[in-house]
Length: 153
Image (cartoon, rainbow, N blue to C red; front, side):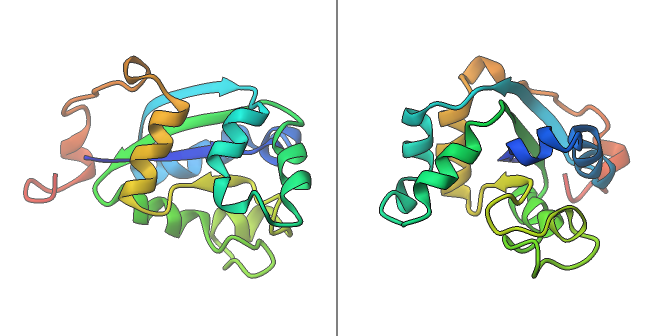
């Protein structure tokens, strides 16, 4: 099973959308194999957003990500990275399709409800950044026969 990182951003917490967003992933059939609430600090934000450090909007991005704790999740499933990216929608909520999380719940490019890993390499690095190995659980074959055909799982 492919694993990916999802962060429910402070905008999700502030707007009381935690359950709604988590349920979208669960209803699709993705499994939560790790989840925790955590307050992000400068060190983890500068590492996580290292590709944006020199952008003029980075200070406001960092400040917005520290307003409340975030919820970090490890989601798993067949093609989990692509499925999560499809469900979350385009980064800028104003351009995201209706029916996607961002299309339904945000109007912002920065306050865009969730972060989702964009590649297998990013997912691996990000999961290590936000979770200790023992915080991600092996759920085995739990409900696999209800989620996938025999040849998919």
